[in-house]
Image (tube, rainbow, N blue to C red; front, side, top):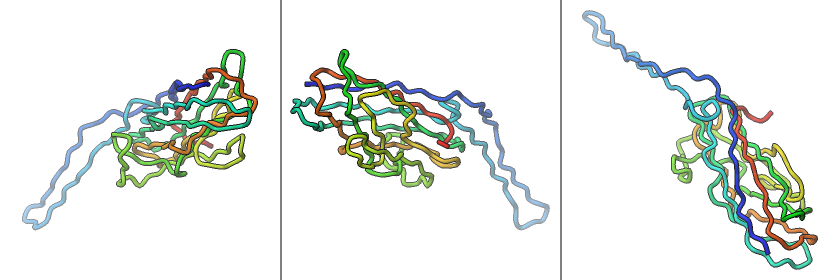
Length: 221
């Protein structure tokens, strides 16, 4: 029997230079004897100085695999996902991307070769959310996307990311926003359809792996 909650490391790209806020004034001018006047209204908005050029990785998923009794045949077990992947873009128009690296899932000298786990999103679009990371921000008309993936065991296509449990994987695309898009806070909601595929050759043990999520303040090429 095995059960493992994965740990994560969040990595951000280097900061880019940002301008400082300046005081602005609204001026009103009325000519002598006039019956109309004009007011110039202006404000200087600067990007959040934290994160990668105004873009921050503020939350990564927590995964919990359900215990499973091996059957000698390929099988699946539940994959609970909490704390969705959340990116906050406070004013950067560069676009951004999130990738993930994964180590092989091992138990001592044994690897879970031939298996995979799939983090599945219900939609190809990331959800624009408010500051609680769960309430939809219906006023946001910019967009970000969840990447497409293929289950290495079943060959099924879905929105999200597929992690091979038998080998180390690197730079797998998870979320992406084009330039002048993905401004605000966006969540990739990996939910009830996420699953661990267990190969028939699995050896009993407690298996572990680590995922590293990397945010860059540039869209994927």
